Structures are given as structure tokens and as C-alpha cells.
Length: 158
Image (cartoon, rainbow, N blue to C red; front, side):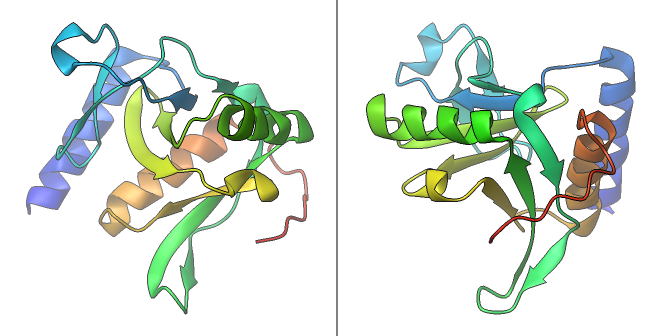
């Protein structure tokens, strides 16, 4: 029941707030009391300070996979596929600038903070099953709705 109420509140807040930022943000090491761009993870468990603007904007999202089950990890996930430019930006963020974590924001909601060690070696970033099915489906539908080139049949390595 709590999951249903949370999902309804999530949808209401999305409708009420209009279009919000979607992209990959940098995590900022700072005292949260001094943070000007504080986000609470969608599950409500942790707060994070993020860059003011996405480091990798929505335009660099080439596509999003369907939600699928990973048999080895025994989890559901979806992949965000990046354009070649987005992949180069991710490599720069992780290798040149030395960032160890990035944050994925969808419609103004922080959905994932992930370690990026080696993530630039492929053109996709995975969001693992840390949410109930409804919330993971909301993330997927929100991304599908905003991907600049929907329906493009892109093949990616996992």
C-alpha cells in the first residue's frame, strides 16, 4: 500500500511541477548544509549535493532499454544508452576529472547515484532494481517520453 501511495504522490508531483531536469549530474563533495542543489534519492534514504546543471544532458541520451532481468545479479534493470559524444563526456568526467560517482536525475527526481569506475568503456549506464516495479516502470516511461530520438533501433553492447 505504501508503494502505491508513493507512486501516486510521485505522479502528482511530476504533473504539478511540469518539465524538470533530466540528465547525468556530478556529485559534489560538500557539507549538505552548504549545498545549493540538494536532492533526496527517490527512495528517500539519502541526500546528495549535485552540480547545478547536468554534465551529460538529455540530448546525449541515445535510448533506453526495456526493463530486463539480469540472471547473474538476480535483479531487474534498465540501461540508458549514450551517444558517442555522451560517452566521451562520461570518459572525461571519470578519467580526466576524477569523479567516482555520478547521479541520474529524471524529471527532477534523483533516481540513482552510481560509481562510474570503468562505466565509460561501454555506451550504457544501468539503473539497477532498487525500487518496486511501479517506480522502475515510472523511470522507464519518463525516459522513453523524453529521449530525443525515440524509436531509433540502436544496438549496444552490455
